[in-house]
Amino acid sequence: MAIPLQYAIRNIQSRRITTGLTAGGMALVSFVFAAVLMLAEGLEQTLTETGSPENVIVLRGSSETEVTSIIERDAASIIALQPETAMDETGEALAAREALVLVTLPKKGTDKATNVMVRGISRQSLPLRPQVKLAAGRYPRPGTHEVICGASISRSLNNGELGSTLRFALIDWQVVGIFDAGNTAFSSEIWADCDQLMSAFRRNAYTSILMRAPGQDAFNALKGRLEGDPRLSVQVKRETDFYRAQSEVMARFIRILGLATTIFFSVGAILGAMVTMYAAVANRTREIGTLRALGFHRFHILLAFLAESLFLGLLGGVVGVGVSSTLQFITISTLNWETFSELAFGFRLTPAIACATLGFSLFMGFCGGMLPAWRGARLNIVDALRI
Image (cartoon, rainbow, N blue to C red; front, top):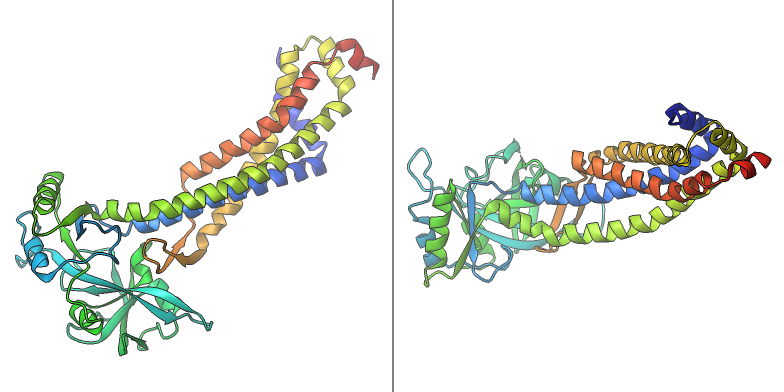
C-alpha cells in the first residue's frame, strides 16, 4: 500500500518558508546552469548560422581562420573557374573573392577602442549570402570608399550609423548602409569594396574564396581537385563546418568554467535540501511510526520523503528555467578568440537545455533527500512512537 502523493505535497505546504528558501537555492543554481548552456549555445548558433550548407570556403592550406589566410590572384582565378561551381541566372559563376582585415575603431559611449572585422566583398558576395538583408541605405558602389555596417556593430561604434564617416587605413569611409544579418557573425562586421580595401591596406592577395557547390558529389569533386592541385596549396571546407569549428574552443571554455561554478553552487543547494529534509524527518518521527503501524512499508516511507525532495528540486528547476528564459532578450559582445575581433551574440534557450536543467535540479533534489529519506525509513516503529 503506497502513501498518497498528496501526503508529501501537504507536508511541503505546511513548511512554506523553509520550502521556499530551499527551492529558491535550487532555482538559483538551476538558473546559473541554464545560463551557462544558453550562452554557449548562443555562441555556437551565431557562428554556425553564419554559414550556408551549400557554400564552400577556400582558404590557404595551413590557415585556421580567414585572417591568416592568403590566396594569390592567379590561384583565385583558377579556383573560381571550377566546373562544380554553381551559376547565377546570367551564367556567371557564383564565386566571390574576398579580403578580410582587422581594424581598431572607437566604441560608442566610451574612450576605448575595439577590434572590428572589415570584409572586402565582390559582386557575388551578396547573392551567396541571402540571409543578409539591407535594413537602411544602400549597398556600397564598386570602386568607392563606401561601407555598410552590420546592425550589431553599427550600434556599438562611434560614427557607425548611416551617413557617418569611419576612418581607418588613413582613409575616410562613408557609411552608406546598414545591413541585417540576423543571428550571425556578419552582424559584427563592416563590408567594403574588395579592391578598394586591398588597395588601402596595400595587399595583393585575397583572404578567401567563397563559392556555391550544391550537393555532396560536387563538393567532394571540388575538394579533391583543389586540394590535390600542387599550384594552389589550399583547403576546402563547407562554410557551416568552418564556422562551427570557429566556435568550438570558446564554447568549450564557457561550458567548463560555467559548469565548474554550477557544481560549486550545487553543493550548497544540496546541503540546504538535506538540512530541510532531515528537519522534516525529525519533526515527523511519531507520524512515521504511526504510518509504519498502519502497515506502510519502509520503502513507502522512503518514497514519500524522497518525493518531497524531488518536488523541491523540480520547483527550483522550473523557476530557474523560467527566469533564465528572459536572458534571450539580452545581446552581449565579446572578443572572438579565433579572429580577435568583436563578436555580438545572445543567450539561446532550447528544449534540450530546458530538459537538462530540469534533470539537474531533480538530481540535486535526489541527492539532498536520499539520506534523510533513508533515515526516516529505517526508524523502528516502537522507538518512533515513543518520541
